[in-house]
Every structure is written in C-alpha cells, then in structure tokens.
Image (cartoon, rainbow, N blue to C red; front, side, top):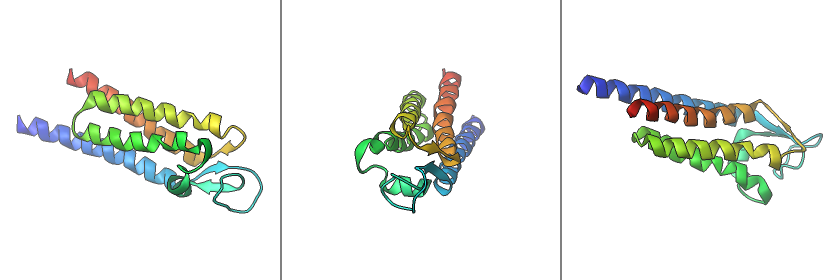
Length: 137
C-alpha cells in the first residue's frame, strides 16, 4: 500500500515540477510586444520578457488582473501537492480565466510566445487537477 502512495507522490511531484518548468520558461521568453520603442518598464511600448512582467506587472492599471493568475497558480500548485484536488481544480480554472483576460487588457499589443507558454502552465494546472480529482473519486 505504501508503494502505491509513494508512486502517487512521485507522479504529483513530476506534474508540479512540469508546471513550474513551463512557468519559468515563460519568464525567460518575450511575452508582450507593445510596438516600436525602447525597452521601458511601463508596458506601453517595446518587448517585455516574462520576468519583467512578473516583477512589476501587478502595479498600475488593468495589468494586475491577468497578473493575479500567478497567485492562483501558486495556490493551485500547493493544493495539488497537498492532494486537495477539488481546490486545485477551482484555483486552476480561476488562474486560466484570469490569464485569458490578457487578451482584453493588452488588446492593442501583440502577444508573444512567452504568454502562450505561461497560459499553458495555467491550463495544465486546471487539466491536471481535473484528472486527479476524477481519479480520486
């Protein structure tokens, strides 16, 4: 019986690590192209990498709405690790929906590969938690 529990723990660890790797990869990639301009911290023009958006995306305007998906992602990963699958599923869905609000908030900008990798990490949490919740029943 302890072997089954240990195997489940390893699977969860691999899954959580996979989501974290996607998130970290998104931080290293360009996410938003606001048009021609010099690199700046105001998100109005130029390319912005994920790590910049993570550090200062919460301040000012509507940028905080999609940024808050990161908080729900962290909470969902914690719940998934603790085997609270229903809570992880709810937090994953909320994180995914908040991540999708980027399309509205940044509607005049071009979203780049980093955004899609980030959104993939959010959706992976929701789908993985849904599968884990379904199997746990």
